[in-house]
Length: 133
Image (cartoon, rainbow, N blue to C red; front, top):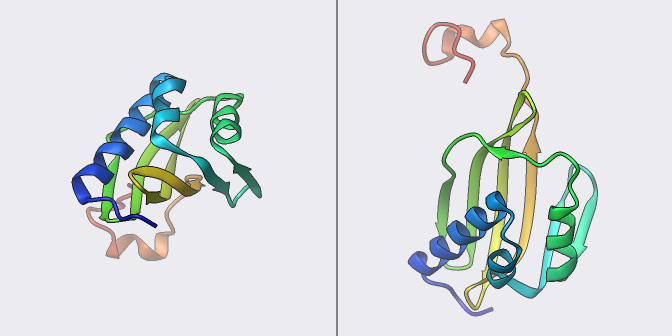
């Protein structure tokens, strides 16, 4: 696996996310390795190959909207993207673990966390009174 520099890694992920948000298939495709593997553990789905992965993203019935700025951390071939996504009236917390090879996304494992109410027993430990975010 060829290592990607920090700047190049961040750039490819930022380009991929922006393309995914606006439905730009050509740019998203240029960011992904031809043999990319995209996994969604919560639904048990795994998509192998750039065409399958991007087609699966495009075929999603309810397309999420970005509900904030992505936070991207990582270096070399391992990167993590954290981003709030809005599905209708609900906001989910997305975390994607991306592995890069030769400057392209080679593998992604993506999690979509549903919101849940805070527990009263933890309220005194949360930042701010009754913090929920």
